[in-house]
Length: 72
Image (spheres, rainbow, N blue to C red):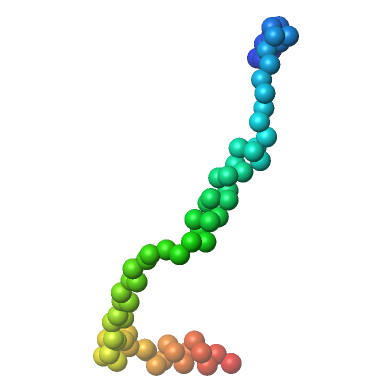
């Protein structure tokens, strides 16, 4: 027994399929025009970066730095 049953009443069933290009003909053009139109957008305020003082920077261990970078 198959999972799909055949349709034995197919002789009187008719359906007209409209092409996809006709369905979206006006829609795509309007979306493109909407995308290309000038938008009224308010500029956003720039966020200021926090100024980092040298005292806030992490201290570098000179011995570990020499071992890591002067490993010749």
